[in-house]
Image (cartoon, rainbow, N blue to C red; front, top):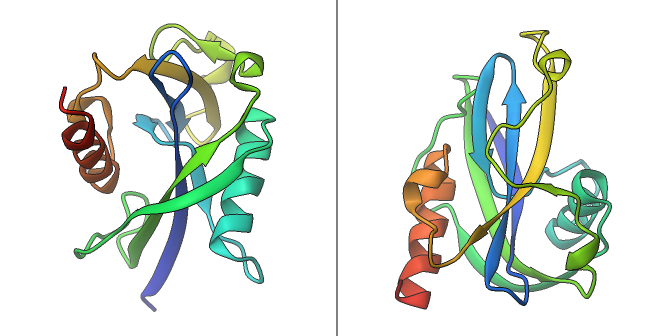
Length: 154
């Protein structure tokens, strides 16, 4: 049975004009995406996004204005029966200096990626003046980053 899979993602830009991204190893694939994830039953989109930032970055965020919601058909990259609906918000925090982030993409230890069925993730900052759509792996994230770049005119 086909389902809708609702995802929530945050656009967090620090005071150095860098965007926070998540480099992940999921079921044998390496992806770079915006921080966030699946909405759980019983939670609103803003609460779900705040939970995801706490889980992924140990970071309490304020969820700000809506940025973008998927406006085209997108099948899941991991399940060819689910349609993905992604909702993006701007997020803010005073604690960006506390974010534990890597400096290069996919900087995983061998044991973190040894199990092809496993998962691993690290956060990383990308300066806005270096950011490109191609940094993102997932199609909807590419749209959101393109919108962000158009807004900042890099």
